[in-house]
Image 1 (cartoon, helix red, strand yellow):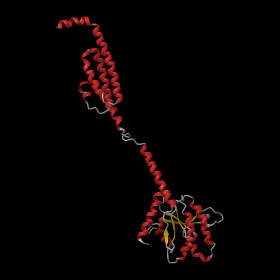
Image 2 (cartoon, protein in one colour):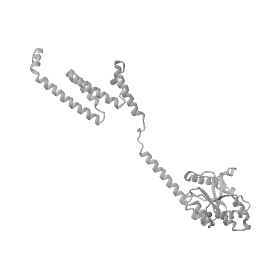
Image 3 (cartoon, protein in one colour):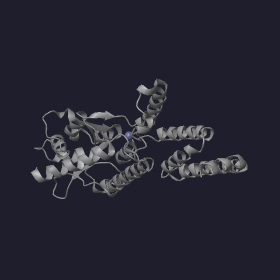
Image 4 (cartoon, protein in one colour):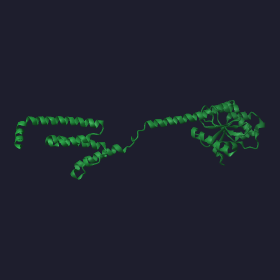
Length: 303
Ligand SMILES: [Zn+2]
């Protein structure tokens, strides 16, 4: 066999392996007609050639399991003593039980054994061009046959086989796309929420520890939760400021400014807070104005 052809056969068998799950040993179904044809070529070890056609070049013949159905065997027996040598060759193959109590037409038997999808992953050896044509409708069925010059060849993958391969690839592509749809970049970073929890705990601890711990306000702002805490602290300070007097007004404003730029929701919240504080400030000013008579005297004094 030419090297080029051998390589082509290996590629074709690789397709059956990758797409249709073929594994060694290959199960090779021999038809009665194929054995009769091979018997005509007396000097050739047909079964050895079949192995080569399937891309198997090693010396260990256990990579191939030759089989023959009961009905094909019956058909050979019927030919009589004249074909005993063919029967003998057939007997070297394993008998494939087809459960046809009465032997049926051998090609019909093979059709049933292979089935619609060749789920048992057989390789078919046939000498009939007509049978080859009808079996080409089964996807994933490698067929070994004699070409017009009587040379044993492996059929190129049939249309049904190529279609099944493309369909499988499309299925894989779809599955891949679906998988991609479910993926959000960075969503799988499990450490992120845990880290912020740790930061929160650290902040709590630092407050309890007092002056020894670093000032949380001077810490780098990394986690959102820390920022929220800062805001809460600012609010607390603001409350204290209300009790303490107007001097804290400036500080409060500063805090508000810092709150900006944290996203629309955070901004809205700080604005609402600011509004409330402004109202409180106005109330304070109004109260101060009401108390003016006493304060007015002091103003006069300062002049
Ligand atoms: Zn049968």
